[in-house]
Length: 365
Image (cartoon, rainbow, N blue to C red):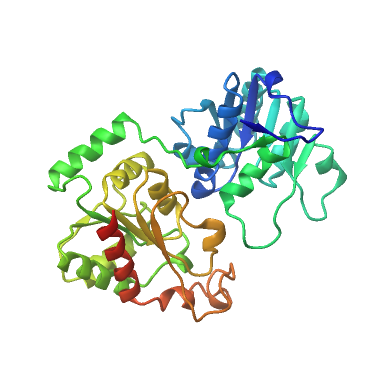
């Protein structure tokens, strides 16, 4: 275990309980899972809690390093001011009762700064912000520098919070962690039996995303499906229950000439993880399911358009990333070219490149 020689390193022997705050989307929360592992490894005596949005809780629940998982329901605000105030007070009371010695805040969300102030932790680490105000600086005992340009993976950015307080993560403790759970494993086992799918004997195609500008065209997904089926591989289609994602998968089924198993909208996040763990290969775009595939160790082909594969690419898993070589503007981070919801650097990616990458991984794993 390596400890930094910085003068203000947090003495871990005095940390009995720590709270990690990550209020972002599903993939972002899953990419914080290595931080929980590292913190627990370096402070095995400490209880590690996390605070996330309720809909993202499956990304961290059952994590072996986690003692308690606290959640914020985004729907509280719709229940009326009185109900929201009651829910907020119950959450704050539960957090205060834990008497945290350390708070690790992983975003620039103001809630993390207020909690650092109100919960009375002796140590609190949060990110430095551009043009940050004095109240933000004074909310934390330590602030970690952020890379202000593309070029550092999000996992490493999260771990920088620990580096700032004197914890140097080892290479072998930075993998993603996602535990599906027994219920999800049983459901997926039943589904595999129902559709006569051999474990590690099918390809999962997750073409949709809540962000449509990250999606590859329906026709190209259908052509890829047909080619994989021609190679002899069963293909399972997955997607979220969102109607737009359902419509996209329906379009792929209609445009393809080959049979497939359509489980779109039928799986919980835990069940999706259990299914992905049984796939021989995952193919999809930059999305939370892609990170789930990495977390469960399934080789994957990931298509990237306007988002950065350096910052958000597959982590600690055998993979191939497909990007456009002729669009010097990527990664632009925009929601489609000109904000038009269609990303040319993604929609023009040829089926042959994706198929070749899939075949390479299938042959080598």
